[in-house]
Length: 227
Image 1 (tube, rainbow, N blue to C red):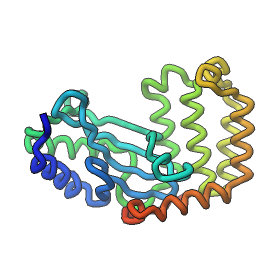
Image 2 (cartoon, rainbow, N blue to C red):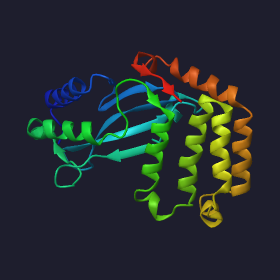
Image 3 (spheres, rainbow, N blue to C red):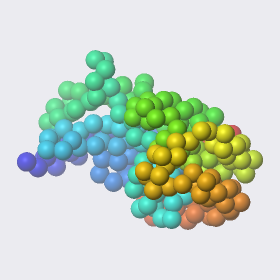
Image 4 (cartoon, one colour):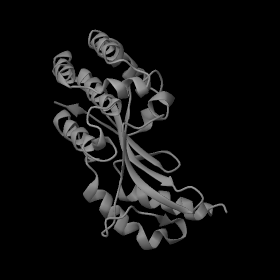
């Protein structure tokens, strides 16, 4: 059964009004640009239902194009109600649950949508995310490595020195070689590729700027990533 267009329109309007720092990117996706990343909210429709759940998201901006950058979020974090359960909001009952859901988003969102974002705060968000399920189950897995690689790339946006500090930490980790192989990667090759990226900072900066010039992205509100 299709969801009534007017109901869907009201849902979008309410979320935009509640979080004016974000802008509508596509239906149910509200973003802003923050330095080398995109942050925002997504209202993810649950399969085979007429319900949605709000999620906090972070996407990279240095992939080969915007489509690839927005293909998989770096962080996808759900919100919980007062009972500790994820929201499952019926579109038809949006008016009943919206204010409570919006308040939870304000309290539980790990990064403020207002103003600039510091790299220190972003690092803290990554650290907290790495300690939650499912990532927490395997602290030296390839999935954890991908998260650290992303933090390295964000640091590279700031400076080669900051990125090198992250790379040194990555090199000290006792990564799970078997899990890397299960995912089709070798630790040594992965570490070598990170070193290549460190030496190719200008390429990363150039790609970020190219992606930011995308017609839809360029219309989003933006803030800086500070040290």
